[in-house]
Amino acid sequence: MTTLHRRAFLGLTGAAGAGLAAAIAGFSAAPAWADPALVDEPFTLGVASGDPLPDGVVLWTRLAPDPLAVDGSGGMPPQVVEVNWQVAEDERFSEVVRAGAARATPELGHSVHVEVTGLRPDREYFYRFRVGRYLSPVGRTRTAPAYGADPRQLAFAFVSCQNLPAGHFTAYRHLAEEDLDLVLHLGDYIYEGPGTSAIGRPHLPATEIFSLADYRIRHAQYKTDPDLQLAHARFPWAVTWDDHEVENNYADGTSEDAKQSEESFLLRRAQAYQVYYEHMPLRRASIPQGPDMRLYRRLSYGNLAQFDILDGRQYRSDQVPTGMDDPSRTMLGTAQEQWLLDGLSASRARWNVLGNQTVMTEADRDPGPGKQLGNDNWNGYAAARQRLFDGVVERGVQNMVVVTGDAHCSMVSDLKQNFDDQSSRTVGVEFLGTSITSGGNGAEMDTRGREWLASNPHMRFYNGRRGYVRCLLDHDRFRTDYRVVPYVTEPGAPVSTRASFVVENGRPGVQIDAA
Image (cartoon, rainbow, N blue to C red; front, side, top):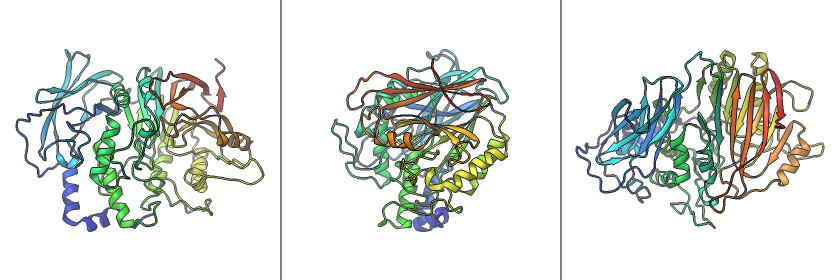
């Protein structure tokens, strides 16, 4: 693991780094704009909510009248702006139950993160923001059930990998029409590369991004997509990252590009992490400190479901071509690994859901006696995976369901305690979800799918179309529907359910839902 991190970052940046840390903590050296008279709509990036608790939720927006301004300012002056907010029980705001004001500072790109409390559990609410004469779009959110409550059912969806130049975000428009309590985003919210586009959606800036302004422009460009905005405004989200929020295939403090020193990469990572926080409905617990940001966390939905949101990128050992089963290698880092096992052991929930970035099941691509395994997912960290699986068995954890992104395909697999012995214990199930657009239109089947299904008897399904995954769970069953679109290179694609699967309470392994 990297040895620099926060102390070295502050040493590298000196007083500027310390000043930024103070600004992120809620202080600003900028003057206040007493009477903001904006001449253009400031809510061009929409609204969002996230990380619901039984008594509250995070509300988000960012003021950006010129969202793609080349300096990354969003068209805002270097002044502090007061933003008013309201939460109501009805969409017309005739029953306002909470209201207040938040400070949008230039140090945080004029983003707003409001941690609302005092709400009732398991209730639908509506929210909005106001600056001067401008009102934001209305967002809808929902609190979690009370701790210890026994809700009848829960509906959520999970998504990942939305490469804007590769396709239209039509899947989000269909997702917004679902009846959901929560959306999980499992990583690759943006892509950092130059990204030319055959369909008229090229990346801005036109080059690979490195600076604070670059990352702000790229995030803002994604947030201007109307389908993505709609999905954010419709449900609360819980987000985590993978690699492209910073750089492809980075590992902890190590860049994929050998020409980037650890010092320069950590500076880049610090800026990328800050901008990620600026654009996501995250709590103050996730405020970055230099190149460090606590993103792994836990959400509870009464006694029905516990969500452990993982960070499989920030603390991992570097990828290696050989020796992937070295027991010293880690995917989550020591602290997060212990936090996860302790949380699973203490869980009182019927279903234990892990929000995971990269493929966890053994995914061999060699149909012969040998093995061909990827090294950027859990297959490159076999000992860490074994520690997790053994810990789940030793602690008697039941009904573990892993939901995963990154691979740009759909796949369903039983998780075996020993993949070389198919009669060994099934410790859980993995549902791998496809991309929103990454990889283009995709196909029903491809070479990887044929190789995976031929080489891995624990795998039950593969599909290469784009879309999202919808999950409905109750006391007895965890049902998963793979919702796919036939194309993304043109707008307006229809959505359909490609396949459905069920995990039954207390019965390890996945079943095809014939209904």
